[in-house]
Length: 539
Image 1: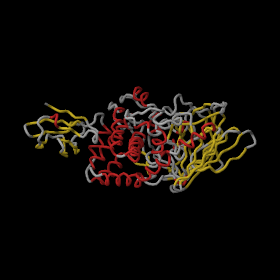
Image 2: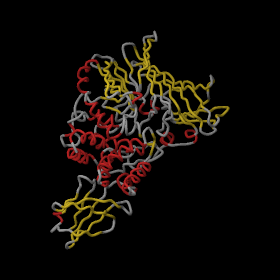
Image 3: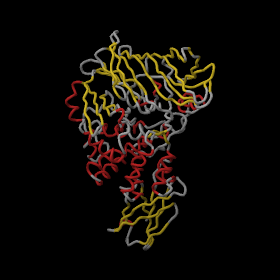
Image 4: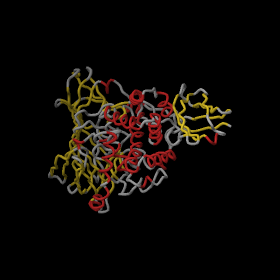
């Protein structure tokens, strides 16, 4: 979720398409031999956070497999942070810095298929977010009792903002991670995965140890520091753990009951919760929310809707806690199924935004779900393409959320068979569970399962600005129709209703004819609630 407060986001917009990208952008977003010659197996992070100094000091032990002979690799750490030393086999390695990239040299080289490990020691004061989670950084606040309340959110900005890492979505640590965080006594740190214990270090700090057994996105690795109360529950064998400010404990016990119905819905439609080994957690944060894997950041203040608002204008958005549902949906889409490049971030956000509609349908039925998803259309701008620029750490437009969701609703009705659709969506979630994919992979999967080439449909909705326009004109008893699109050779079926008769048109970019009983175009109703399109009736 980096959507943020939607009205703010839509008003602010995104950088112009003519933006010039810098070397820093290429170093962060690109793939070069220094990145592709090794595969991260595990991170072991061990740090101390000083709330007064707003500082971090410690190390990340990076275990990796060498894919090709090499003498140099790239890790990443923002250039305002200090590289204290990089140690390999008890020897300090030479390195050079180029913006946020750290190029590490191994004097004797590394051999293909070997497994290696280094410790990257670092320190500094990481960037503080001005308005998390809409910009990346640490959040240093205090609760109502004056105690530190610290979090971090770095989606898009990069995890290297606060710890050394191979900062690219193509490579997750295959064997998970450990996250050990020391904070002042009286505070707790909650991170991803399972709690393994705490240790008083005897210096006024206590270290809190967490273990992640699953692969995890770099930006999902997190810390949450506060004087937390812990609530434990279970649901159908899955551990549910909630960490909330002490004053909110009783409120949370009631409010978080919604989690169970949501999990039932999502597991029915998308398959089993992907990270059962690491459990499911909600952690109260001072910022709105973020999909931190197995430790979902929750800051919606125990309200229904999106900070109490219904962003669809349908009334249905106030029937559930938006942050619980949306951010938990990311456990399947974004955390489990991950895009190779953030230019394809719609794979995270489009499917997750669609999961909101799925949840509404589970609770209230199809008609309410269609009402909800069509309410999402009011938030689509259609000013910039959904897919961003590859290789420079550049997301596409904010339309990746609602336009992506409405495109999926369109695919559902192109399928025209709900049994097939739900089977297909479940198959997608299970086929690419814990995998890293791209738009082409999504296209190929749904094209194969639907039995039609969807390339032109994906291209029009994701790579161009405008949505398809269905042009209609009446010529005697013939209804003439065609698609107006940027994508050439565009084909997509669409439904119209004349009286009580539903007609399915096999529309293309070329004019076609259909005999109808309509006296005028006002008698022709296009199923725009099922298909996210515009209609142009030509008199």
